[in-house]
Amino acid sequence: MPHIEIENNVKEFMGTEGAISYSDSASAVSSTIPAFAKKGDLLIIDSSVHEPIGIGADLSRSKIMYYDHNDMESLEAVLKKVATDDKRMGRNSLKQRRFIVTEALFRNTGELVDLKKLVELKKQYGYRLILDESFSFGAIGATGRGLTEYAGVPVTEVDIMVVSMAYSLGSIGGLSLGNVEVADHQRLSGAGYCFSASAPPFVSTAASMSLACLSQEGTTLMKRLQDNVTTVLAGVETTCKGNLAIVSHSSSPIIHLALAGGAAADFPERTMQMNILEATVEGCKALDLLITTSKTVKGEKAKGGKGPAAATLRIAVR
Picture (cartoon, rainbow, N blue to C red):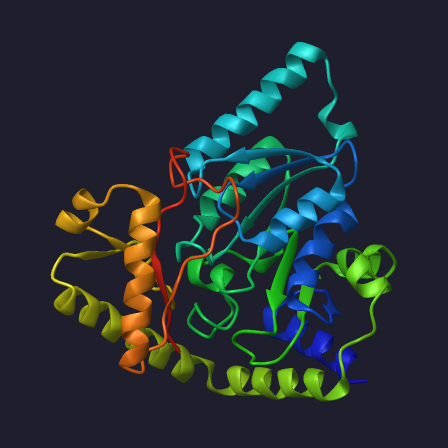
């Protein structure tokens, strides 16, 4: 069956023991988290993750703690606080399931998480890692295998990984990857799997065909993508003349641009900046250029945890 074939193909491509496919990309994320984290468990989450992670965390009914966006020092401070509270209260950490949850490539900022440091911390403090590679799978790494490949971290160091078929594979759906137990557990506990039909056969077949292209031509495709990213970044730096700053990672195909220099000083409020950026989007449409502004959820914080997330333009490079 096509949906079983894509599971086998992706787990072979990524080098994991198991995989389970969901018929919707967002559901893959929002179902995976509550399949493992339940009421009384602990989720420590980056403050700027995209919406499906937040939905999954809410559905789990677990205790949720946030750390400042993509700040490993802030994450460690939260982990230390929990450890200190354990000691003070005489609490046995082994009686609570604990997870660190983050995106690999952040949709809302275009930044990459420091995976090596993340793995170091989760081992040091005894947590499991749920890594959402929805936007990094097929987009970074020498052959398109995502952040684990880019950072040189064995895929087995990530306890639970989620990838999307909706972006790099140009299809519909998502997959949750890990060992055999991670995949099999979700066949009875993943709400988006249990209470939904499998993806239409042509959708899974299309994903398998795209993955075959990535498997065969990954090095060439990734080099071409990175060349395009470099070209766009160079064009922005040349054309925008200091009025826009690149705030995303230099390897990210999701590029975020924020007001800079005099433009930022003249319009310090986020609402005013967003109005200017939305006017820029409309101007680009007239030139047959399709870009958009960043979309955030209520309460999302900027890096450092101070103030709301920055207003940015978002460009997707292919």
